[in-house]
Image 1 (tube, rainbow, N blue to C red):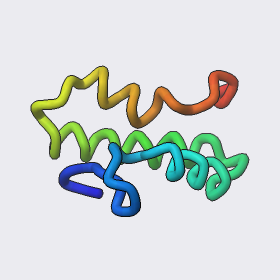
Image 2: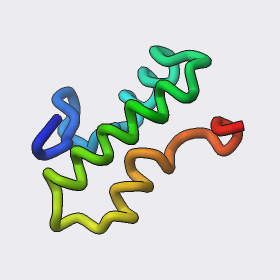
Image 3: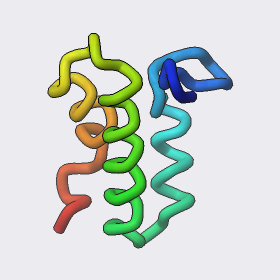
Length: 71
């Protein structure tokens, strides 16, 4: 996790595929809450990883959500 934003279980970029599935289950139908949580994580990652492209981080943290997730 922070400040490298890697998964403590598999060492892949966080959120890894396993964590993505876990987050969807954990937040269930609370779409806004998951969006706020991931947005806060993205904000922290932008600070922690200034050398990583902003769009890459945005896709990594938010781009994996199902297309119909937001409405």
